[in-house]
Image 1 (cartoon, helix red, strand yellow):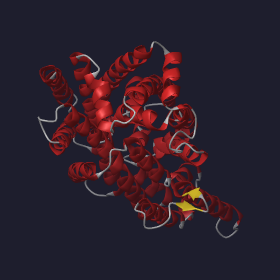
Image 2 (cartoon, rainbow, N blue to C red):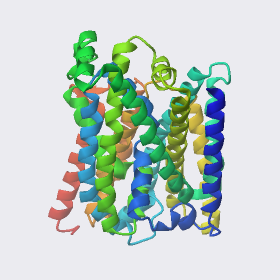
Image 3 (cartoon, rainbow, N blue to C red):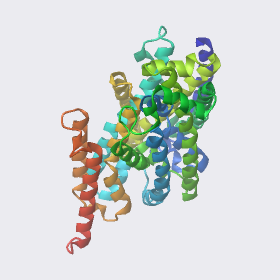
Image 4 (cartoon, rainbow, N blue to C red):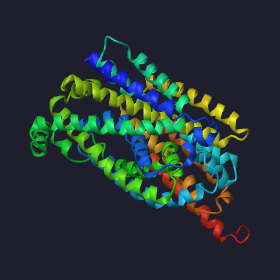
Length: 469
């Protein structure tokens, strides 16, 4: 098994090196290094968007989520992704129209321009930095614990994680965003191949979908309904998840960047339709894996379940392909997110462009090391960590949507400050320093509702105030 992995892994590393070298641009500007020239076509846009959106948390986290919490995980992610596709088409047109009026380097810089305030940009950068780190960390940790569980005597978990981060830093520093996007094509193909081979093997174990559900019902019938055996999938959790995931293309910069650099609206529409189809293809087999684990490995730890399902119960070749697919997903997605943070840092800075690119590169390395530390200290609840990231960045939505749709956003001086306060309160609730509910409402939903009401009130005041219109 280890020998097969080494051979396939060497091929993968060689392909990565070729992509990084062949796409390396002689042009050292921010536009080429961080934004890939801002001329992204529909096909490449589809692959890079899909690879960024469906990552290690999907391949490793969702099977375990189905296994532990039940079939309601389908509502959590698949239904939310379907709604997100409509939001991508509806909001994407207006966002691109406004963002393309100037050179786009990141959402933080975009908001600086719309609000005519550096503070608004700093708030956006702080928000994505705090809540994107957990998302990057789960890519690293997810693969590291999987590799350590598979080869416990080869390397400790922290060394697996460090090796992954080292590859990410080298690859991103050499190739830039264009190299990452081309590797996304390879990652998307590997992800689909690996997830469907394993998923179908799990389904074939039962002899079909009907037989699978019958076996699950015998083990724990609560897995086949909401809110699930642990009561997780209540209305507030599902509503909050849907809102956060629907807003994700604009509140998480690794995704909004890809929308902004699409070459035209037709590319946006084609990409959105493709993403909806891809979501179905990716999430369905994770349900088969989760139900497989619920029947065969109901008491196993996360790492034990993943190791048995993806490696021990598969042939050595399939196991090796799955592991390379996981590594590809982790590297490609994390690179995209680190690059997004670098772009956000560049977008709030002003000065000579070459110097700003150097600062962004240093920032990417610092963000990568910070993510490694977080990965080593975080828990194994990959999906819940991802959802925390979605929920946290969703607090930026009123600020971002106002910047997109309200021409006089610069008059709403209080909105950036209110957003920063909301982020601070949510972090305190996550740390357990204050309650995580407000009048029985989840803190993320309560804060998002309060921000939305305040935002609409400020806009209404601007329209009604004769001195400010």
